[in-house]
Image 1 (cartoon, rainbow, N blue to C red):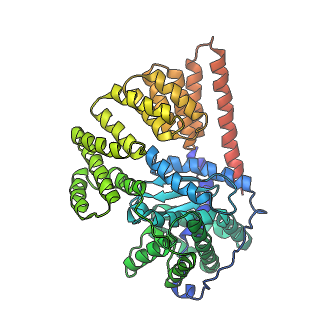
Image 2 (cartoon, helix red, strand yellow; image 1 turned 90 degrees about the vertical axis):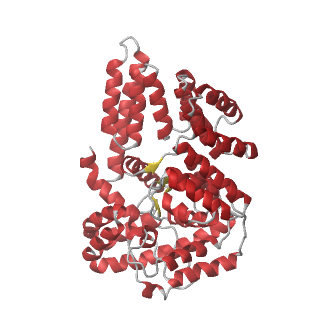
Image 3 (spheres, rainbow, N blue to C red; image 1 turned 60 degrees about the vertical axis):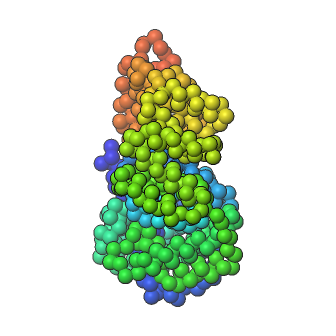
Length: 494
């Protein structure tokens, strides 16, 4: 199935990410005015909002299957919190936004159709405060709300449709290896490349202007944008190998000066360190970077001595607890977590790590009892719910896990972690039919409808003939998956 779908995946990868992977000349950019008018939100004649949303949803399925997505509930909760705070203050929002992490130490972020925004873990590790992270997210949100992707597709199709075939390979390679992708593009596009470069420069400046306005409205420091951008530009000014962010979002001096002027006009908002931002950085450093826990523990001990703000000191303690957990020094990790939770009893980062420590010590029932009380307090919170299901599976309380997960999935059908936990609960609880059904949902969320349908056929064959309601449900879901696959093919048929 994937091989048959590959040309359409290439087309979607090209059109959705082209605006971010085309370079432009620093000299030519000097002439751009600081006052960039809104280009508008055209593109509706080329692609409807509904089709854009539909393509984005299916493309996200492919990303789940092909990219190293970080499905960490507490990090996901944090990123969506920052992102949706910005979305609430943005104009031209046409559908819900979805923010997700990519496990990659490179500095990059990207947006594509339907309000999907990906953030590389390396970008957050580079940011020094939450306003810098929010500045990048606001910029990507602006690319979506201004419909830059659809407008770029419209312009390319009108200019020279046949050149899309030349762009496809370079863009797809560029997702994995930006420098190699640039080489393919630069040798294959000739005149069209310069036309796209100029238009992309307009998009970048418009996204800066719109994004910084959103950033300020949301209560973040507008200085976060020029601070982050100028630091990156200065560090890599003479580098022969640029980070992905600078390759997809070039930063000439004129653009940095423009963001600095806009920040001054909007007014600086000095902010104290944000605890959850510092905790997110620590979690990414320990669990999703290439450093060993032993080396990080030494780093944290040294860095904590230099930290002056109480929030930063608290974050270093959390980092130490995570590293100790990785080293299976559970008693030491628990002592730290008890102190942190006493200071911040509602903090979800702490709740998640305390659960891991309990499980590491095989205190499964203690974890379930504590998380059940938290669940009664916050029944709709994804971090609490998924941690309780995780602990319940370890405690072999599969009925509890199934009940809370089925209730949660009614409103969170695209949560892969929830389906994985439910599949485990069914499998270990001896319900082979339901385990096949949950596996099918996971495969479908990763764009593999053919294998998902095979799993449902296995579920159907194992369901008792007398259980007509289960068989009817499985048959209905098979038809729905077939319809989704057909819908995907129609949506990508340009």
